[in-house]
Image (cartoon, rainbow, N blue to C red; front, side, top):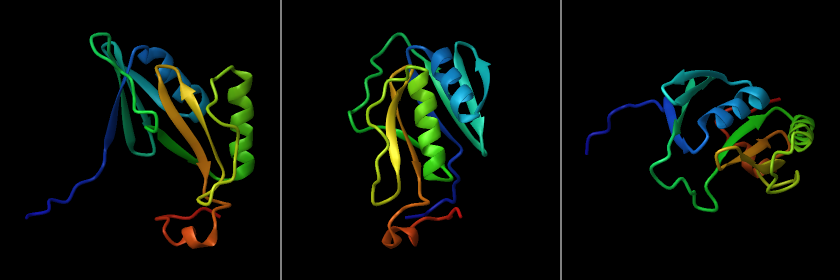
Amino acid sequence: MTTIPSTLNHLSLPSRDASATAAFFERHLGFETSSFGTSRILKKDGLDIVIEHVTDRDVSWPTNFHIGVELASRDDVERLHAELVSHAVPMETDVFLHARGSRFFCWVPGGVMLEVNTRADAEPRFRATFASQRT
């Protein structure tokens, strides 16, 4: 089998409300957004996320499907959680300590679950598995 080198350059997520989904990422997570017809393209840190506006098919996700973003510290995670709660973002969990770092889960408009985490307080046995570590 031949392996061709590749780089992950985008994700594509369907949404019944691409504008609201994109606005969430722009407002709360600092993504830049642009329009592509009725869909939106989010850009940050060299990654594109295409928010595809769909009305002709189901956009239900498996209950454990989610995307994750990493913040530098538990304090940052707590601050963003409080901000999202104040904006009535539906929460799946409160902030909790996990072996791989503190985190919480919430629902982005359009039906995508988001995990917000930090690796700063991860258990030592996991720290060596992280490609890059924050201080």
